[in-house]
Image (tube, rainbow, N blue to C red; front, side):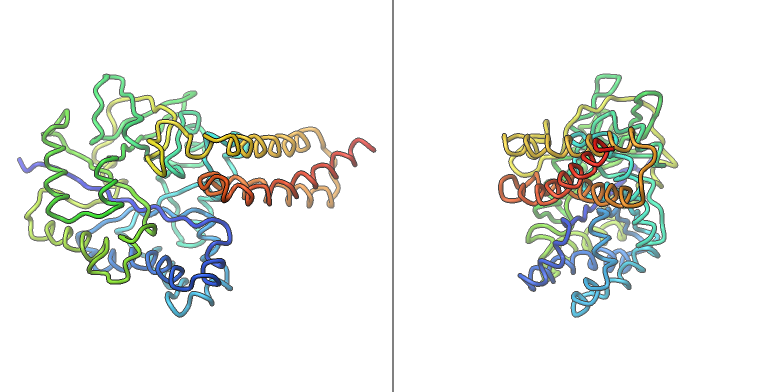
Length: 393
């Protein structure tokens, strides 16, 4: 029997609010590098469509920028963005993955804010590409079990998590198979990411090393003869490896296309596939608990959320977001007869709050935290205005 080793390769795409406009106005070359990363993925998927598959996730705020006519015009010399989106929508070998709209760290923001990030994130994927995602990629892979009911309610059937956080019922961790996880009666499929091989995908690898490393890891896995699912995931537009303008020296030219060629000529047992196709044939058989955590990024291991909430400044910023959100919900819960003006003010508060929950404002610490307060301060001023009106009445 031929060994069954399947590879699900994922790319995560995200830009903070307004960043594409800022880049094109301040660093035109970097802006071009980044935009070409988005186009390159769908172009190579099309060139290698009979053999290659990709999973690609876009944050809602990045797609919002794709749909902005001003951004479309400014980036037209590099990439035809509407055409690119159309190609993504038609690419049967690309699995589009859902994400939170503003790319929040879900375990750090109020749970009552989760649903809007999830629903809006899914809706804008449908608007941009004409397809609805069934799999979910937590921003920064920051996941907690409490997210499961919210994900299931919105219609997601699986979620990708970093394999190091999975605790199987059997006590034997096998990151080369899916699990199922249940919280408050709701169950979702858990896809483990291989952290070590994903690190190589992010920083630079080649087909020979990749094939050898995967086979070696599979040989030492708990069930080497069973169908194996190797899931690797990284940013798709960050670092010189992905931004390399000389394509033969970058991710797609140096690794991806040659790797797919080894599959075509049967010189490797690995096969490229979409996660949904794998799960149809190999649904999870074992349950697991997932410890709260994220991926290894920045200066952290991802075993906690210290990259986003480790410093006093970050903790205070998180507390501010929680406070602003709580004040918003108290008004929503207590006021039944809001005027049209009050409802409009609440809409403005909501938009500022959700945008303030963007993970980048916390990730970069002192450098970007001021951008979080640029959203929360006007939101709190509007809250003060509303609350004083209600007290006066």
